[in-house]
Image (cartoon, rainbow, N blue to C red; front, side, top):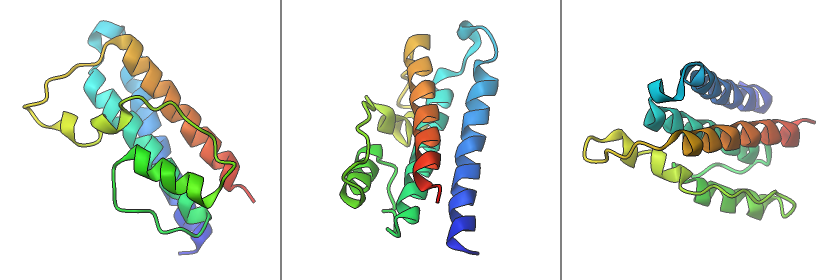
Length: 129
């Protein structure tokens, strides 16, 4: 697999997460499974950031932390944009376990969905040759 193919496969996975978000939000907000939608938002952002790092010939760290990935992105490209990510990383692991029963409200869910969509779009643009 070429680097370009590998990067494309990361973006395919990110797009699949975005598709799950769209499908989940295509109903009244009171029917959303908001913690799962936010999980997919985190996953989409994570995969897009890792694709960007690979495009920069940086091996992405094995982490779910958006903060760590953003630090790596800034280090590899000083012009990298700043994102207000809030608690997006929280949805990567902690939220998946039954002792964490946090259900984000619709506004927060929508915000993370939009953020992840923006990150995926931006990373695609930044990795085009």
